[in-house]
Image 1: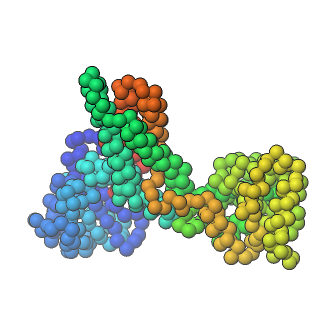
Image 2: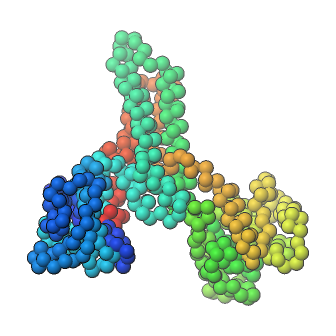
Image 3: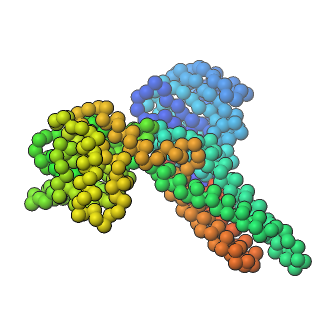
Length: 481
């Protein structure tokens, strides 16, 4: 990409690409952007005016100038330079959604002077022309790739500038602090106090708090973007596969009365209250001599380690076995839920069964060195039936509520690892700055740390960048965006 996007001569090209997904559809859109966008459009659309009005659509026949044959009926929508996504003259040509028609129009554009856009080049131009910053550019791809309503809404908020605005506020405070520190250095020989240490410390403390709040949001941002990973585990034949099918509302796993039916990891996704949740069914935990089943059990343990939550499934019509209690103890550090399945088998007093399970856990020798474990479990023991759709709704709602993913819905969050890394550096710089201030160190040393914090924030926004950064950001884009 360094040899394509980041080339000043190519920035003067008029670029074009099919912006809609490949395949048959209602319409296809071909985007044209650059200094010759209107002239290029007029060559194949004789109805397009010499001086078009911005944000106005023009209808007519698109033709091949060489043969005068009509290619399609189209609508050409014009966006004036400075008022378009790329901040360049842009025309979006909408044709019927036949791939061969779209390709023919694209071929006509390139044969008359247009160039096929590189991956992400429209967004790259928007960034380079100051239409959006780098955070907003990254949010374009996040929005396109969003797999849930929550992820799409957060991506849209970043595209609209929520995170950028927060970073600019942080940048402004850093500049204020640095300006006063520089003035303190200049007037130090004259004994003039430019800013009180207490005022500066308060300002810097608030600033670090703002940065840390964003850094802390990365974990929740990752959950919103990638979805929750929830692993279903337990001994064989307790209904894990039936529960998976209930939770994702489709038959994803094979269900039989035979213990050990599931021998591999089975993943299925669904949306819960606008959030993507990846449920993972695993092989039943037991000692097995079957080589294939043993591999499946090993995968079960591996899946547990990377989970955001673990559903330990047991048969609620029976007491927990010693084997199950031991497995539970091994999961004590996990975000654990106890799901008692098979509520439909016999008349069960659900609350009495919950209390009995908690009592059994609290009295087990496996938990004697785990104080507080039962208290943590109190609200996480659910007695359900994999045959009851209402129980599926209860489990899903309880999961999202307990993980408190919704708490960030009204504030900016970090999605990108790049943002997290840069702001983590800024946080450490601010921590060292505060230590130096409290030690009454020379303002020069304090200023050095704060300058590094400022540079990290500016790097995040894309006010400073290098080829490698732009390569990483734009190489993931599709052609046409």
